[in-house]
Image (cartoon, one colour):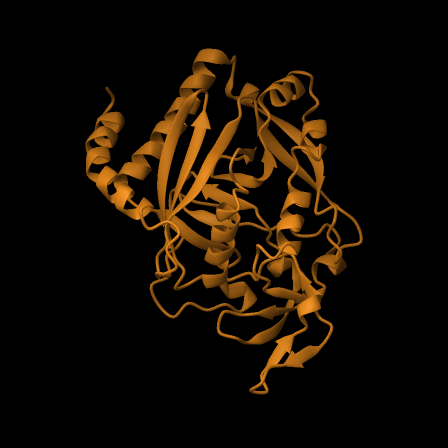
Length: 316
């Protein structure tokens, strides 16, 4: 048994009781500064369970958004659709094992990613329209007032994206902010291909109750998130909300195991590391009403799927 696996086994016993206690709180209406989530990832028939601590006290709307999506089961059975050396990106595509394998083998992953059965943009918008996601971004179409005379965005102008809680978008954290760390989760957004479109102005409703005018591209996150798997990241904390961190050494060891097992899979099953991914071009934000057209993106899709089996909120 490797040192990493031995360390994981020893820590697992100590952590098990804490997991059980946290899970018992699921459904509790009490909100803490640091909710927790359990993310189960599957690769090549093995499951890897990561425990996360979220920072509601610093990124309240981002954490709420992630929790709402998790509670709706939105992330369950999705894939890491863009595999990069420092960051893995997920939260947009369902996993269909047979269709995935067939599409990869036939060089038709663009069709897989474009298939409405796999591409979850419509599902996300449906959740928003059903009231399952709390609005925080609005078209710049004017204001209403509450009973105290405070200015509010027009409810009907709400759009299905998320206020970007990071410093480049005017969001400040007084103290205790953490930087890019191994295993951290960041809420991700795709910048529009047309600069004028991407910089359309919107109204944002901050957690502090302020209504501010901001450029759209910083407030266009939907369901996408990035998992940092390197010591550094291409996504700075000043431009992306880094809202969750691995809770303990055991979870770090589990992520180490996952990365080691991917490396072993490549060595044992494939001719070279380059055979593990293929570049795929596709369109996203196809139904974004603030952009003239969809955004063209390129992903590195993996030969064997890395699947987000489930995201479960274990403490609120």
